[in-house]
Length: 254
Figure 1 (cartoon, rainbow, N blue to C red):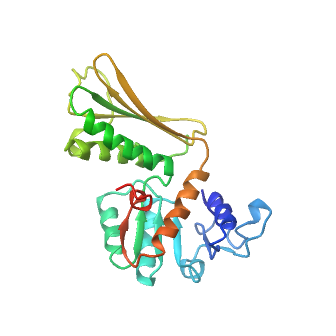
Figure 2: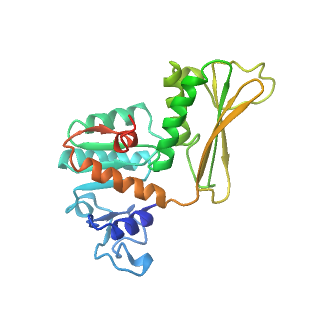
Figure 3: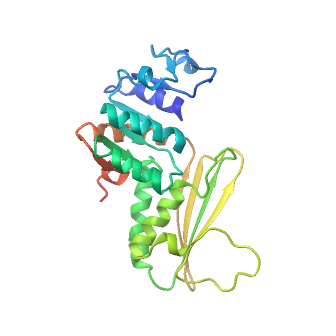
């Protein structure tokens, strides 16, 4: 994802790569951030936040919660705006991001894809129209290296649907079935997770009624769509001093 972002920024006429970060001990530390593509970026990869963000106005973060939260604290203190694509935050992590948004502008989204966020809007409309007589199941598939499940995108889909139905996802979500489970509770929202190979990201929401079913799907074939969405978020935050936003705000879908 970092490489996709570096390439996208290099191709954007209104942006300049100011820094690049990696974990301490990474073999890439000290090397040029664009070396992988054969086009030098003139920016060395750093593990030190102060060095990596010295010239930055924005940080685009696709890492893991523990790393992102350290970045959030630093950026809030130094007025650097944040675009966060990391998933898997617990309630405390989300609260920390919300507190940081009081000091700097933050765009937090489990999926930066424009298509996924349009899909979320479609799910909201579908859920309101199919509120009775339809069972709702969410199926997601990702590559074998993904560490959290269900995906942040699947959970966001569940939240959007639950909100549209006036439900609390924490109370109605079912994350796995095994053995004699009894009949399906019609008020629940089910999740199924697939992990394998190099699947970038597939999500399907099934509204299953009597005599018909509706499936709303989004399938990613490349991570470049996430990079392009992140750059749209950068442009959106440029005019914001503080506040917490998501891709629905960026795309004017609210």
